[in-house]
Structure formats: C-alpha cells, structure tokens
Image 1: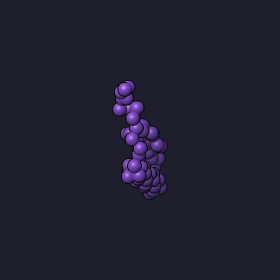
Image 2 (image 1 turned 90 degrees about the vertical axis):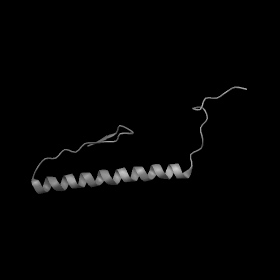
Image 3 (image 1 turned 180 degrees about the horizontal axis):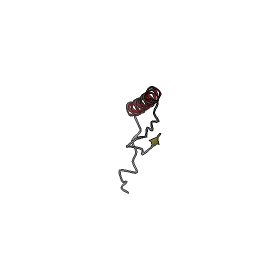
Image 4 (image 1 turned 60 degrees about the vertical axis):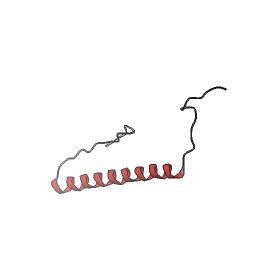
Length: 64
C-alpha cells in the first residue's frame, strides 16, 4: 500500500471555515473604506495632500 503525504490528502472545506474567511475579508474591506473616507475628509478640511498606503500581510496586496 502506497503512503500519501499530508499535502496530497485534502479535507473538504466546511461552511464554517468559508464563512470565517468571508467575514474577515468583509471586515478588511470595511476598515479600508473607512480609512480612505477619513483621509479624504482630512484632506478637504486641512487643504492638504494625503497619501494612504495599505498592505495586507497575509496576501501582500497593496492598496493606495
């Protein structure tokens, strides 16, 4: 009998795991949107140019 590595055996994802990921993604999106909104508001109030950069640690995605 051949042995399989743990990487070769994939367990099916449960709905609980998928929903947790979705909630985390939604939270990140809400926080990003609120930061951008506040930056625009501060820019208007202070008559200043503002640069915002956000990097997601897990994926390495950069949003400006």
